[in-house]
Image (tube, rainbow, N blue to C red; front, side):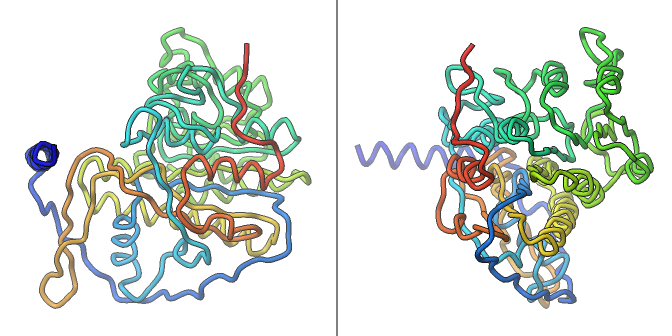
Length: 388
């Protein structure tokens, strides 16, 4: 039996090496340290009124470290690295040791394990109540921000219930009744009559419900409504002129949601760190880590001033099996190696700042994070199934 297991392991490693791209794919430049912020202090003795939950899709330790090296150097810190509480998240889904974003996000939104591809449903395809929906029922405001389509797996898992992540037309339709005050990202094609298979004009329906529809960065900056639907690209953001940054979307969302005296729940996804991992592109990953870290800064700045806001940063899974392999020349660059073009089963980092941040230290299952967020926000005890 031991010989058989060893043979399987060798064959698995051999197959993975054959399927993965040639390595290294590129070198990254190591910046000189220019930003060395102080570590944020623990916040004691206050209850949680607001939660800002940031998910860096596909982000493992190597992605964060490469972003750090390229941005602030080996002695500097990214803003998310200043958070005083750290831990790790185990990420497996109900049917696979390697999760996808749908099941990973549903573990956070519903507090339960489900199969890969599931959006807001359990393994039997029964809808599960999400933390966003519970918050709305309790009178809190809610929002979703993403650099992918807003109907993509991660944001969808907080405001929709479908058996497959590919059902983005249906996800967009369900968003109308989610109650979320702020929806910012890409995905205009899933809301227009021309882009949808059923030819439904969802943009008009959102407008009729009081949402101001935004199509570019200027629209976002000049918006005046307390209900926003921002659709800044046909699908995922393309990082072209006229699109808002994650930090800009985060700041606008916080401006609106903070008007509710009962509190709020805001989920922000750095979607395309994952896409860089799938493409084995260190440059892509680093650019997206930098954009995501700017959103983390906006969240931390708000939380420091507010004093009643819990900020939690994590990932749904790691993508690409990224590793920092060898120092080049005099230490001004590193070689990046990849083991796969897909997700891996390695644990992902977990960081927290604000009231009750210490609840997120240690090794945690992804379902623990979802359950604990709902508990601390005092909106209910996950998981909760929605029976027909």
